[in-house]
Length: 107
Image (tube, rainbow, N blue to C red; front, side):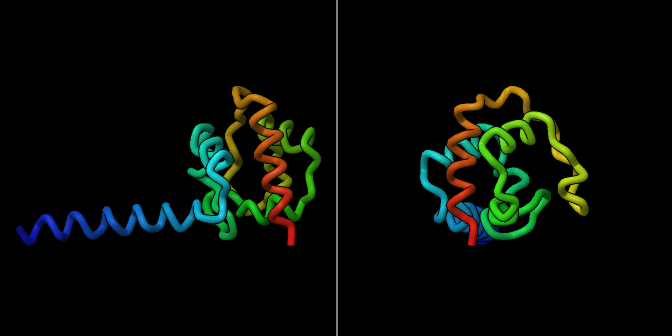
């Protein structure tokens, strides 16, 4: 009986953290970030494996630049981070939607 609680509590915490992470992300954007595995390395406002989305927003990339950098990343643009894997399979229409959302994070 006690073992169930030790398993359930960490699972609850993981679920809660995931929910807190996506709270500021509109559901349609969250679905795209999940579908294209962006959530693995990027968080809204804190550094992870990759820069925070708010840091990406501060670069003020155009939609065209954003899409090009996702499809063919330039590691020199983000020193101190693991190089991003190229994601040529992500449709430009999805990248444009993500880019529009990222731009809303500029302070």
